[in-house]
Length: 314
Figure (cartoon, helix red, strand yellow):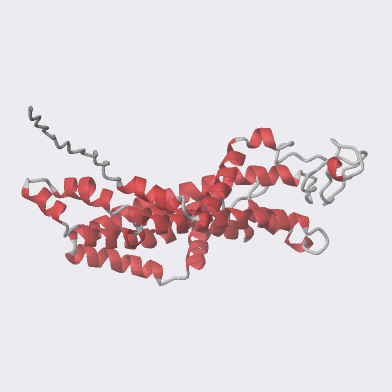
C-alpha cells in the first residue's frame, strides 16, 4: 500500500487596485448627477450653437430694413409662420417685425452671439484684474493687503449699477464702455474670492515644502497656490457671466450700452418698451432670451459649486 501525499498550494489572488480618482474627474461625476446643472448646460449649449451658426439660422440680416423689399410687410406685425396657419400671402416672420421693419427673429438670434461675447469678455477682464489683486493681497499680506482691500471696499460701497452708470457716463455711451464699466465694478467680487482661497492655501504643507526647496514667491503663488485655489473662482466666474449679460442689457436699456441698430437684447427692449400692450411680442422674445440665458448660467454655476465643494464629494 503506497501513500500519496498531496501538497496543496495556496494561491493568493491579488486584485489590482484602481488608480485614485482625480479631483476633476470626481467633480465631473458629481456634476452630471445634478439635473439642474444638466439643464443649465443644455441651455448654454443651445445658446452657443445659435451664436456660432447665427448666419445660417437667421433668415435675414439683423439690421436690414425690409420695407420696400417684401410685399405686404407691416410695421410691428405679429409672428407669422406658414406651417402654423399664417396666410401664404403674408411674409413669414417667426417672431414678427419690429418698429423699423426688421425681422425680430434674426435680431434675437444675432443677439445671442453678442450676449456671449459680452459675458465672456466682461468676466475675463474682471477675473484677470481681480485674481491679480486678490492673489497679491492674500499672499503678501500686511499693509499691501490693507491698501488693496480698502480700495475695493470703497468700490463696493457704491450701488453696483449706479457705479457702472457713472463710469459709462464719463467714458461715453457704447457697448465696449458698458462692458468696461461692468467689468470694473465686478472686480471686488473676484478679488475677495481669490484672496480668501489664497489665505487658506498659503499655510498648506505643499507651500511650506516649496519654500523649503527654495522656490521664489512668484513661483509659489502662480505655480502652487493659485492652481489649488481656482475652484471657487470658476464658480464665481460662471455665475458672473449671467450677471454681466443682464447688467449690460440694463445699461443698453438706459441708452448707455449698445447703440442702434446693434441687435442687443437690452436695446431691443428699450426701443419697444412703449409697445408692451399693443405689440407684446416685441418685448416678450428679447426678454425671454435674457431670462433663459441668465437662468442657464445660474444653473450651471450652482452645479459647479456643488461639484467642486469638498464637503459634498463622496
